[in-house]
Image 1: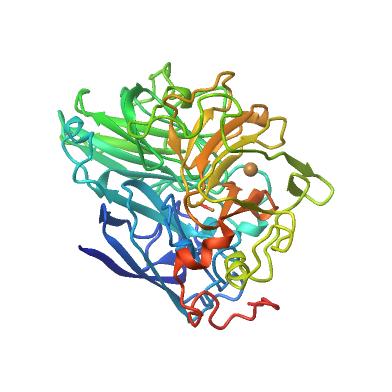
Image 2 (image 1 turned 30 degrees about the horizontal axis):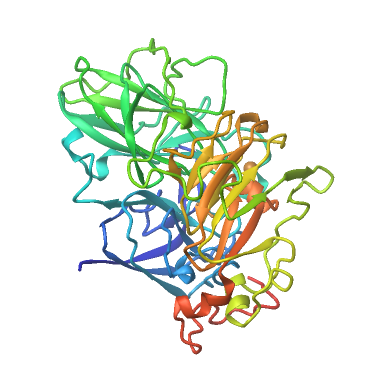
Length: 495
Ligand code: C2O
Ligand code: CU
C-alpha cells in the first residue's frame, strides 16, 4: 500500500496573516501548515523535526492528529505528557500510524498553548469508495475552509477578550486594520463541490454561512452523515464538517462569513470574519452587502450517522456497562477549572510511560484524581451536566469517536441513529447536559478535554486509561524503545 512519507519542520517565523506582524510558529515555512492528504488505508510516516529557537516561546513541541483514533497505536497520539514527552528543540520524532478512517481531520501542537501560536493544519483522508461521491463533482484540497482566531500577542498573554481577527484559510482583517486581501474560494457555475470546514480556533465557535447558498452536510468529524440541507453551521473548536455546495447562483461574488460566538445582529462586515466565494467569470471585487437571512441552522439532533448508526449498548437510559458523570466547576480565585473536584495538571512522567512501567490503577496513576481507569471492551456512557461557567465547552475525546445520544439543548435521547463524532459540547452558555457513548476498544491513556485551549491549560481535562492491564501488550512497544522520552529529564522538565 502507498504511504504518506513526509517531514514537518517546525520553526519560528514572523507572519502577518491580517497585516499585523507577529512572532509565530510555522510548519515547513507555511502558516497555516501544509495540508496533509492521503487515501484511506495509507500508512503515515511523518517525521516532525523541531527547529524552534525562540527562547521567548516554548521551544519544545508535540503534534496530535485530531480525530485519528490511533487504534492500537496510542504512542503516536502526540499528547504531551499523556502519551509522550515533548520533542526537544533540535530533536525529531517519527509519527508512524495507519488509520482505517477517512474524512476531515487536522493536526495541531498538543503542548501548552502552542497551537494558538500557529502550529495547526488540515489532514484529509480520501475514500475512493465515499458513499456520497455521486453528490459532488470535484473534491480536492482547494475546497478546504479553515477557521481560526488570531491574537496580536503571545497566547499566554491573551485574556478573555475577543480575538483581534478571524482567519479563513490563513487570511483575515482586524478592526481598522489594513485591507489585506481575503481568501477567495473560486467555483465554476453549475458544479457541485465538497467543502471541508474545520474550526481550528483556540476559543470561539463560529456561525458559518455563505450568502445566497444553502448547502448539504454529509460528514461530521470523520463520520459520514445522512445528508441534511442547512444554511448555516455553528461549529465549535475542534469540530469538522463536510458539506456539498452547488454553484447554482448568478455569477457573482458572495460573502463567506464566520461570525465568532453568538451575536444578535448578523450583517456583512466589509471583510471582518469573511472570505469570498467567487464564481468564475465574476469581476474581482468585494461582494455586495449581505441580504441573506439565516433560517435553517444545522442542529446536532438532525445529524444522523450513515454507517454503524445505532449507539453501542442497550437502547435505554442506563443501557451501558458503565456510567460516568463529569461535573465541571470553576475556581475563580485560582482561575482553574475542576472536573469532579480535580484540576488537571501535567504529570511528571507521561501517563503512557507510567502504564508501561506497571502502574495500572487509577490510585497510582498521575495526575492523581484526573486519571480514570476504564475496563476493556465496555460501553461507557458519559454525561457532562450543565450549569457550568464559560460554556459552551467543546469536549474532545482522543482515541475514539462517540455517539451523541443526548445532544446539548435536547431533552430527548436518541440511541437509534445519533451522530457519531469526536467533539461535542455541553451546551451553549453552559446550561445543558450532553450524554455520549463509546466503546473502550482502544487500549491506552486518552485525553478528554475542553478544546478551548486556555480551558485545557486551566485544567479542564481528564485522562481515560483504557485497558491499562493490556496496554503494553496491545501496543507492542519493545522494552528498549525509548523514543517517547529520549533525552527528557522526566522529573525536572525544563526547556
Ligand atoms: Cu485537537 Cu486533545 O486535541
Ligand atoms: Cu471550555
